[in-house]
Image 1 (cartoon, one colour):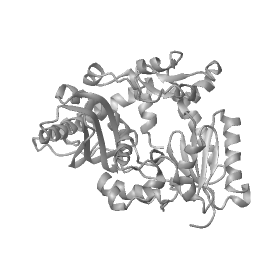
Image 2 (cartoon, rainbow, N blue to C red):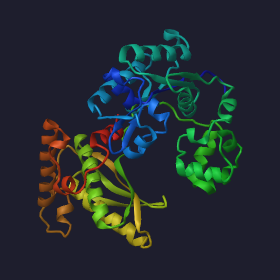
Image 3 (cartoon, rainbow, N blue to C red):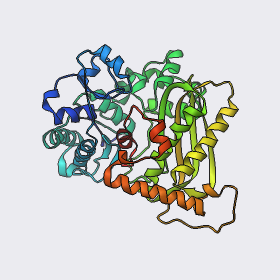
Image 4 (cartoon, rainbow, N blue to C red):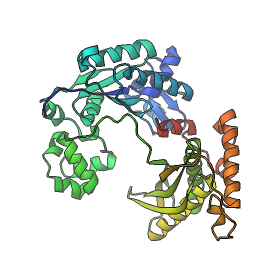
Length: 415
């Protein structure tokens, strides 16, 4: 591959914890964690002790007795994240934001205005530090995958440029977990065949990784390890699905566990659909068992839905079917709901009263309409007084998650 490295990946460092240290200067240089019962995010000072996101609070305190927990300032996360990523837009219109704290940018064509991609990256870092007050790491390369890895290598608060022709040497000794799509399970499986670095993965036959990780994942990782990534920076991406998930640890696979969890997830997903005036026809659930094996079940409905109760009941049916197909599974560790085949649905299409058996699950019937109107009333109250001001009784009384919904919403929001 020849040419110029013009793809930038910008990633705010320890974003949530850095925001807290910005808002309260007395926290700077100290080990802090956002959260309480569960660590939502940790500062670099806390990470040095082994503290990380998702860790139980008591375990984090055992590792770092001086750890200080702070509550999240979610409105400030959104405001400061927007401001930092907005700096990229001053250099190019080709910005693809992929989360609240990271984005890609293609600066090809901007060099005659702002200098080389490396010069632009340096200026972006200085501006974010001066104008927003947050540290940001940047990677510059010819592909999105390589730019993202470069920004991880640059952390904390650094810049790494991978010049054309040096990609293989750069990737060779890096650990495979820096790659997109390599989580703990994939990492363990690769380690089982002696693959620990990206260079080793690049030398592994494609059929071997496909048999180990599945055709889609194995093939993709094999290509990325060889720096084959044709993806372009996409500025406008229409959401094809809306989803949410909840890790349960290891809980019994019984209705008393999955019912409240699914209703909570349905509330989050359906409220986001309604906020965008959207509805979806296909509902998919994912059930992960204690051994990390997962199954999915889905159903395509005759009409698009966005009502919380209809989504929850549909998801519960799918989970029951999945568990019935796996009667020997006694515990579940994760549940997820996704709604796809989305369509804009600003008004509700009414149906004639045919007295169908599934009337209450059909959005346009009298019962379905009543459910939708109840949801809209809840939405209106939340818009005015906050999400915690009102909820569905079975969810509010039956489940109180360790991770605040406001934090989840930031991670799942369409940007």
